[in-house]
Amino acid sequence: MADTKKENIERECSHCGTTSELTPVITYVHQGDEKHVCVHCLPMLIHG
Ligand SMILES: [Zn+2]
Image (tube, rainbow, N blue to C red; front, side, top):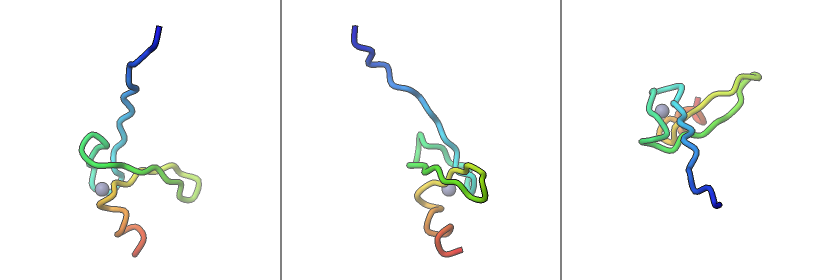
């Protein structure tokens, strides 16, 4: 039996609080801590 159930892994942006339901959210590690950032906040993160 094929299991077609999709895993619902929701992530929340550490910066603006949006969830991966609405916006792609990327997981990264900073100083040993795993964090999440959405694609809208990612440019801000890059530019400091
Ligand atoms: Zn964000």
